[in-house]
Image (cartoon, rainbow, N blue to C red):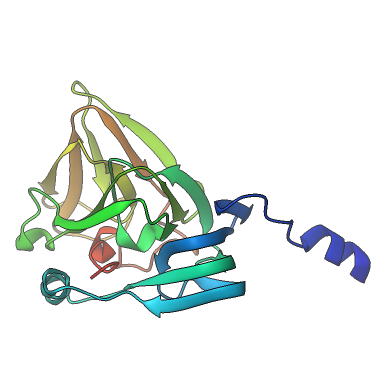
Length: 232
């Protein structure tokens, strides 16, 4: 019985540098130089690795003050293997170029990918001052999701409105604005009064996740509420 458990769950040998899925809930990164990840996401590592908190510039400290929150990055350097996970959320690896991603959904990424925190256009402070993280450059990002994500195409003729609790990210080329409904209940949150949705227009796609139920974000704490936390 014990031998069967070991055989089923023992990690496989690494074949090349970079990230790959260890299982549906965990990413293994074979480091040969440098990579970046969310603070607190490390599960285990082996080899000659140095882990340090990434320094924060003045602009990012200002944005941290605006959002009122801060979850930072860590840099991993050296040669070895390191595993990342986030409370058994599902993990997916995607090409990071040209995406805007909610900070809470980012697990780790290649050092060749550049990032910048931006205020979501059309989302002023009266809508929560929503921030996203815009990625560019060649490389991969590991994302987390509550359950199985959905990719919804966005076209010029068919804009998409997304509940802010459900959004993971979208194509950076899309135009964003905040749509406000009054006197309606949020289907996702069960709230009353004003309800803000993120409206996306143009040509591209948006990634959304289930956000209700025991595995969803806590009530009143949606993905966009936390978009500025990473790299703050």
